[in-house]
Image (cartoon, rainbow, N blue to C red; front, side, top):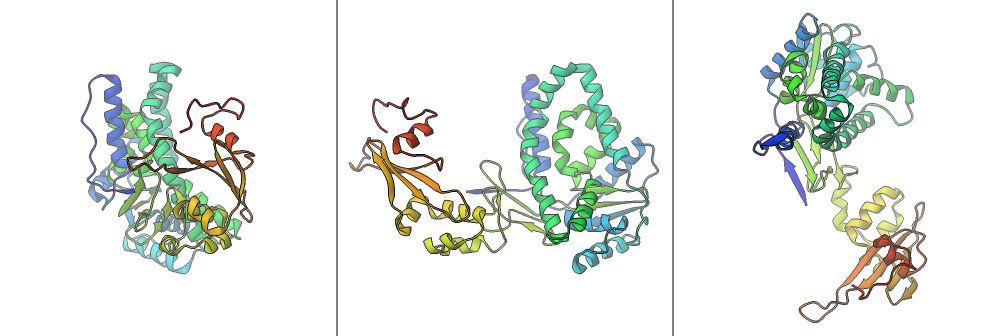
Length: 387
C-alpha cells in the first residue's frame, strides 16, 4: 500500500526534553524533505540573497526557475559549456528557461559556480563549531538523533533522482556525457533534500551563514548558484512511498515534477514507466521469459511465489517433518528457494494455513530452510511444536 506525501503534511507537536526536541526537529525537516507542490518563489529568492550576503558575494543578477532537477541540470550544463550533446528537446527547455530570465544559454554567461562559498564552507564551519562545543561523542549523538534518521530517507531519493537525470541526459554508451551530467549535478545545492544536514545544525540553520540555504530548502528544490545567476528547481508535484519509506508508484509515478520528469518504482525498485501496467496481466510464462533479473524478481513478488510454483510445474527437491523445499531455477539469476510449511494451529474453521518461506538459494533441506528463518542451523532447530 502506497502513501502520497504532499506539502500539507505537518510535523508532530514539540516534546519536552532534548530527545523530544530532537524528534520534533526531525519531523519538521522530514516534512521539508517530503514537501510537494509549487515552490515559494519569494521566500527562495530571499534565501538566495541571505546565502550570498553571508558568503560575502554580490547577490546574483538573475533567478532562473526550472520545473525539475532534470532541466536544472541541463541548464547548468549549458552555462558551463557542457551542453553540446544534450537531447534537443530538453536542451531547448533549459535554454528557454534561461532566456526567459534574461540569461543567455552559453558558457560563462552566469559566471563561475559559488556552491562551495554558499553551501560547503558554511556547513563545514557550523559543523565544526558544534563539534568543538559538543565534542566528538556529543556531535555523534546529535547526528544520530537529528540528521541520521533523515539521511536514510533522503539518500535513496536523491540517488534515484540523479540516476533518472543521467538516464535522460546521457546515452548508456557515452561515458563522457555521463561524466558531464554528474559534474553538473555536483554544482547543485540540494534544497529540500539537504534536510538531514540542516536538521543536524538546526540552531545554525536559522541564523548566520546557513540561514540562506535553510530558507531555500524550506521553499524550493535543487538549486545551482553561480556568480551572476541562480538556477532553482521546483519541488515535486507528487511523492509516493510505501510504509518503509521506499519509493512506490502505486497507480502512478512514485515521483514527478511539473515538466513531466518522473520516476517509477515498486517497493523501492526502479521500474520502467510502462512496467506497472503489465503486472495485472502476468503469467508464469511471461515471468520465466523476462531477461531482466531485477524486473523478474518484482514480477515474482507481485505474482506470488506459491502461485508461480504451482503454475510453472516446479517439483519439490526435499521434504521432511518441517515442510517441503522447492527450488525454482531462474535463467541468468540465482535460483529461488522456498519452504512450504503448514501452521499446526488450526484456523477458526478447522483448516490449517499454508505459508511459503523464502530461504537462501543453497538451502539443501526443508529443516535447514526453516531453521534459517529463526537464525539457527539445522542441528540447532528443534521446536517443541511446529508452527
